[in-house]
Image 1 (tube, helix red, strand yellow):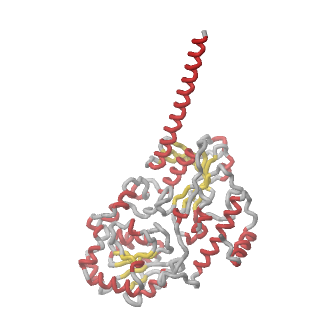
Image 2 (cartoon, helix red, strand yellow):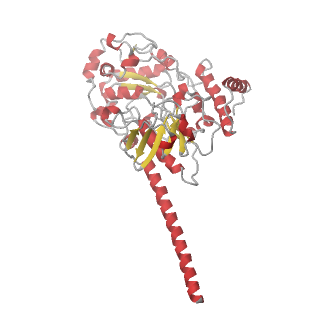
Image 3 (cartoon, rainbow, N blue to C red):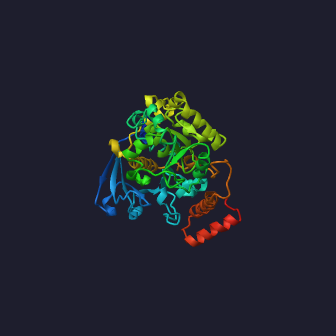
Length: 454
């Protein structure tokens, strides 16, 4: 009998051990699958619903805290995972609420879901530079968020190539004007095109272009440094810049000034991609890492490589008079894209523009956040915190001298936003409510005067 009892105890212990091992194995499989699906391109399906009652939803809930998509309620399916997404703030009280979504351009620091609860995830979608929300330029600001979709390659959902429709758009000849025709057009056109109507930027690009104009002819059609009128049909460049007519118009120019409004790592906009698409050589100033993303290493003339606007103008003049050297900058129009890094980032991408019947990058963001919400709903998951790498926009400096310019109001705003970010982080991390916008601004100014924004 004693032997039977011992045998039974051994079998029970063995069974318990096997069951525990099986449970751990299944948990590991789920964890690995969730991690795989985060990196995979999964189909996205939205199902709009007219249900507004909290009781009608039994899936994980994500709430757009900032108005952005206009979505009053829909179910999103990302592979085998499902979430309910809405702008209706009532759903933050749902028993399965997991995550707040914020659109940077619409974010107001005095309108946040405070006091912040430890279990709530904050995710940021912001494809723009810090021009309209400068506090994100600081670690204290960006670290308020757990996940991000920004222009940075290091973001959870990188939007670096958001303005590139496809590889084919960079290599095709739809808008391309042969060099012989461009040279003929120099009788009527300057070699360089500039079209800008946003004249107040952290980069202070107009100051550089104004200096450049002293040494080479530039046709400037926007309200900034305006010296030439667009055809009547394109009289409002902000409305016509994506039109076929404007793209064909741009293609006539040998060079196009493509200066961003701010300097941030990986912040690259349509200002660069438009001339690359139509076959005009970009003269670029902006992201220090732009060469990682060009079709080939010499697809653009980089202003940062020249000591002054005068030296840059001299180089452009040489290219303008040397057909062979000029054409070497347009190798991508011969279907040659040699930049492996760019290829690797574009090839697996399922999201794109509505024009080519692919889902939008906002859908991609919502889908990835749904996946991460499921992942974070599991027990013992270490909470991620965003770092400055995903929004690396240093202090503004002069586009001409490369030094701080005390007359540039954006430099003051950068310093002010440092104090904003620091104070806001203190409020949130202390578990406080936002008290009063006026008092907040007064405290920020006080810290500015005391240089106490550490």
